[in-house]
Image (cartoon, rainbow, N blue to C red; front, side, top):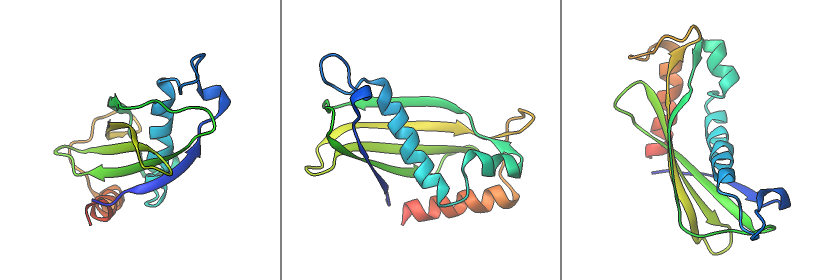
Length: 140
């Protein structure tokens, strides 16, 4: 499985009064990683709309392993896995940059819909081509 890595530094506004990154920011970091991966295949939200689709997140999981503090450098690792339905499933690992200690892991599922909110059950055309390229990249 191939991962795309994105580096971030935990900012002051992302920690709570105990000096640990607030749990909600992990979802924002997942989004940073997902956008970095999707950008490579012209699958950012604006690209999908141009193709006539939207992809709302319908499921999100996050398992927290260790806290991280202000000023620490992290790496967000993102990949995609082949779904059984017309959807995008991304997996994430957030680690300390230098030691590679696992801080959290998670997954999102986005369903594919037409811009007029009709659920897509089978991919075709350009969207199928781009998603297939994404999955092939991640599986090699």
